[in-house]
Length: 290
Length: 200
Image (cartoon, rainbow over all chains, first blue to last red):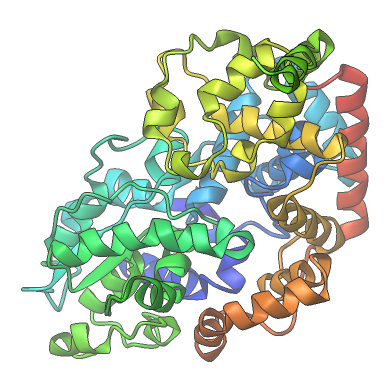
């Protein structure tokens, strides 16, 4: 099974552990991920307010043009926001006028895009293509007794509405269960973490994070997993601020779901990228040899 | 009614040109689609922090109330979480409308911290083609002014410490695209096209 991988900017910084653990887990599963050569930032949701919607669309489309140049494999994104942006732009290529104009701009870099590739999210590829049976079959350390809150976040299932159920998603919980752990239901599974607002309006972010952590904690979770870099960073790095602001004492490790898979697959702590976690998962995962 | 209130009422500006301008923007057609049912504020993650609800913003755009629309914090607080877009019976992608409104607010000289962040972000994109997350925070700090930067640095030191200690904020920029000059040419051409087409 082959895909072209769009790593996204967070893979080189705040979500470096996602990138590495995803590649390690993909190896175990026989999932071939070939990085898009010379990829650029997808523009996220902020660029369009500076350079305009169309230029922001072309910025994202450059990656699809590069992917197409490499072959006919569909593109897979690890980050929810990158997936939302690339997927939305990809859809626009079915409009002939948009396509002609976008390719006019892309020709300045000697590129063009036909619009034939699909953009997928890693979480979707894992469940829909690799399959839960295969995911379960590679487990060497079943995570028995571990209670996990699967925090899907907002854009993952809602931005394109192309996989899972966007009001009551189950994919993430199904992966957690396939690893032998227990997915716990919690009310704030899909609530927004406020994303990049964490930098410009930290107080608002903290007020949004508190109920997410609270509901995961009250559901008895030992840790949280997520498929989104911004969700992970906000819940992990700002947990200290939530505790200060609300007088709480949360100590909930926040992992990318691929990191939890790596642990269940018996990969070492380095390959699982556990050192990058700010709230240490060592205690919660001690019984599984971490 | 006191004289002052009466005067204030009399001076509310209804600007039909503004309504037309929003309709002509890239996502302006959606403003016409809204049926004012109010599901967007009931699902909005940050509704309580907003001056005006997304539904009210649409209503005011149609009424030509330019100043109230552009001065609201609503569009700056939209996180693009897509919750309202999923539940809107007319399928209005409210976050895209909000992005257009940000653009319009900036054109009218109104600014917000989120826009300062967006500008720093877009600058990194055009300079390197990729985002250097470590530098992003620093450049944002410089953009909002030294005083505000110091305040932010102090306020965020616990968060920053965690990220630094766990090597999550690269101190040096990771490599960018091979030829950022070409990427800028692409983006410039795209902006030219968008201008010519009057929005896409």
